[in-house]
Length: 138
Image (cartoon, rainbow, N blue to C red; front, side, top):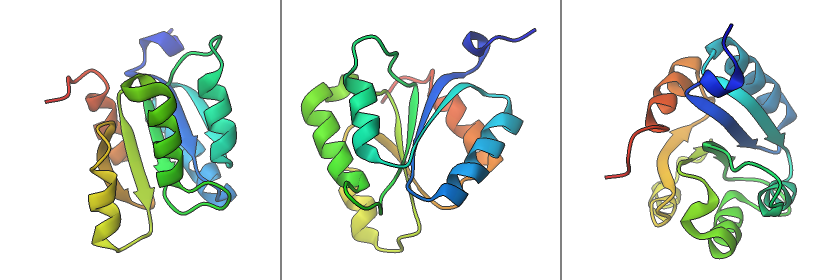
C-alpha cells in the first residue's frame, strides 16, 4: 500500500478563494494519485499562518490563485518571501483566469514561481507538476 510519503508531492497547498474550484481541485488531486496530503485555504492569510508555524511541514508545491479578496496571490507571495525567503516552498504555481500578460511577467519576478497556468487546473497538469517537485531549479 502506498503511503502519503511515497507520493511525488507529499504535501500540496492550495490557496484559492473559490469554493467550487477548491472542490474540483480536491477531486483532481485525489484521482491523480500523486499527492499525499492536500492543504486547502480559501484565505491566503490563514495559509501564511500555517507556514509560520514551526510545527508544520512546508509544502512541496503551492497552487496559488491570483485574484482573491483580503490578500491576493501577489500580496501572499510578497509577504511569504519576505518572511520565509526561498524556504517558503520549492515550487509555486500561479493559477488564474487573468489574460493580462503583465500578471505572468510579475509572477516571474519571484524565484519560487515556476509556472503560470490558466484555470482550471487539469489532472494532466497536476501530474506534470509532480515531476517538478524533484527537479532542481535551473
